[in-house]
Length: 283
Image (cartoon, rainbow, N blue to C red; front, top):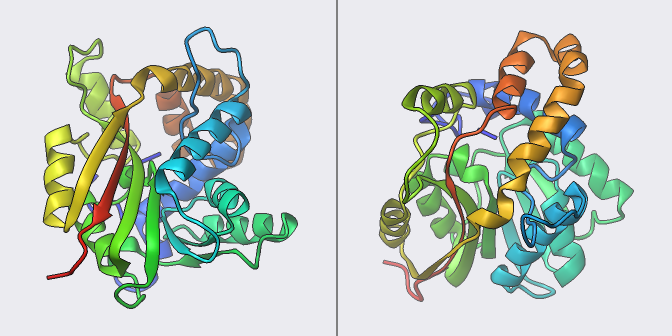
């Protein structure tokens, strides 16, 4: 999971050499070990739901697939694709083709390897590309989704970059962590430590998300708050981090220790699934 310039686009040359890309490489290795290939929160039906992490992660992907509403033959941009688990589920469920982009070289390699293992290379691909500097032509994709990766992408610019490559009327669906519209239990110091360590920008408000989407040309904006359904994620990740702490630090060094320490704590946030459509005609 992951300050400003989180796409790494300010770094000249290879985006994989940015600090954020290197950070994401370490985070990805940790998440693969303690959480699996879905680098995002799970969805539990209730606080009493004892479903496995894998089932909860599958449910989250399924919710977003249904919100996206694509069909076979359509082309989807997966911005910040990780090692591909959500993209694979999207392709397998709908028959749509998925192009994943990420600035983390190990994620591209992992995506391609896993796609080959699942026999999905005819439907999915991954490229080492900065979302804020995509080489694709205007109107290249029918839809796009972003599975929590806006915590790693400068949101206003990222939304505009995605809008450029979407066809008129194209759909965008993303999951995101927002500033809570309620009292919080954590301290300002704890929140600052979390955001700094995890390379995250300040969590936006609902009003900011709506304004940024509107500025990028999106309409029909909807937000579904599923905060209660993701709360078990923090507890499950903390347990995994504690169990694997020594092995991960031995393998990856002190940077891993800082990340694992944060995964064993938590801050208050709201969790939303946002959907919007690009207006029918571009300016």
